[in-house]
Image 1 (cartoon, rainbow, N blue to C red):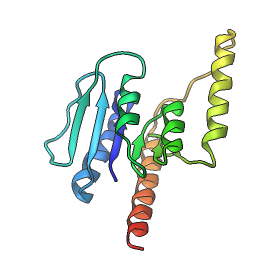
Image 2 (tube, helix red, strand yellow):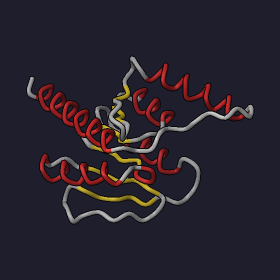
Image 3 (cartoon, rainbow, N blue to C red):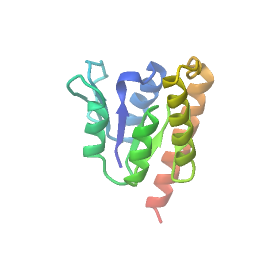
Image 4 (tube, rainbow, N blue to C red):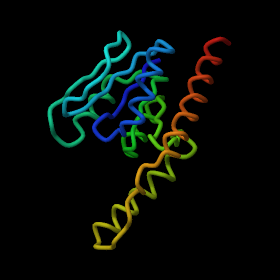
Length: 153
């Protein structure tokens, strides 16, 4: 299992959690972005800078994803593709996307997008808060423990 991070929009507190997880659990994590990001020295962490452009980082992640890999992303269409390819997607706010919840979440996202296109004012997500960081850390811990236990069976 590998963790991929859609890094351009990933909040710094989430990146910091992932930096610690990589070394502590010896999990390979790749931060994919279209701009340069700074990471600590680690044999378990790397960055891939892709060219600028719409969904180029997403396409890179999809192309390299293996079943059971985890992708950290707030991008719901990307999360839907990841789940479709038997991967897992975790939102930086702590929502784990799976086959049960992604269809409804994607439908709501698309509806809001249509309403915005029609001129309606639809609020975006609220500001990232410390509680979001805690929810992410808890969900990541639960997920990694579940994967570890599944491997032991």
